[in-house]
Length: 482
Image 1 (cartoon, rainbow, N blue to C red):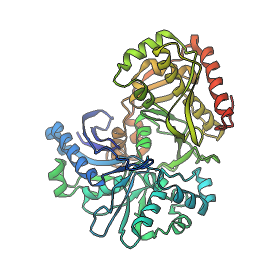
Image 2: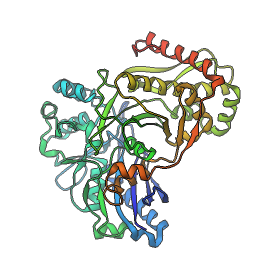
Image 3: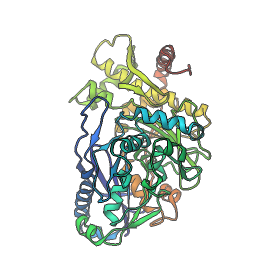
Image 4: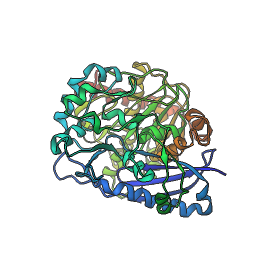
């Protein structure tokens, strides 16, 4: 039976999966990456030279698990974190560390890029932020000079080149925040000119799922996968997770709950947000994937309850019922979605009686962000139809999912196993095992656990939600009271 492989190059680790045409994952592997360093406040750097070796090692472990079946892998795709970029010289060496999605040093470049093409960004629903790849590339050109730089790259560009033996194209998904207009299918020249970025430094851009080359004999020996295996272009991590959760056609929406909360959906038209919190990726099928990424999420639990048994706290929080306190569980400073507020900070209204109530208030707070996010998407014309899929590792908590369903007033389908690596498998399968990406998504994303709202807690949670939104409005972060 033919198989496909998917690779997820996250910030902390590389993860890989192999799956069949029905989406059954038959093997998984993972290796850590060097942790990002922060030499100054607001800086986040990573050793980019570690990406390809870590991917090769992870694929070698995956092939070992597959044994003889490794020879059945016919295609592979690579997804990664959006906004992490690097620069290469003419010898293919990195001029310095990669700047990760969390790096904020390119604030001046972001302002220049935003002003240079404001109408284009507004039409795409984008507000250029320092976390984007485009201003970071501008910072690199200013730092090293265009004459020393041969190529500006995203994470998958580096990995695909290592697998195929030649510089290859990038995809519209990873290129979106690097200054690529997926509607006009071009790099935004006005912004590049304002940042002194020559077009010659940028990769060719194609649609996700399109072929990018084939695995070389040398890469085959290093990974254990068959030489000639097709390498297909991927999408960003959140888009790949969305595919894995089953967003196969317009109207379907997914909440990806991990360290942060990402809401993604499918729409016939791009969704533009004047506030810059919602933007749309292009789906290869010709429709769009609107959504946004909050800075709030499960990381707040890890920060507040380090080393604790969260499953036990889930159970106690469910038994305790709705919290009297209201928490906005933002870690650090600044929010991206459902509203854009660089100065936003977390808060708690009221004093939790004990640690269980404090824990429960965080669970509810993330659900409040989720509800506000869907309300904002509806205001902008993106309308979920039917159940919302809950994916991401934190969606393994049935107790938390029930709180989320109750706050949303909608049933959920929990698919915590809908990983970025599985989404990359789906992208690899498009054209290899299935005719296109939509059919691959539909065929490889069955199942899920239905989650119903708890009607007995709805009124209390609605009251807390209103307090939450009123507090956001009073602080000037959002103008959308409920």
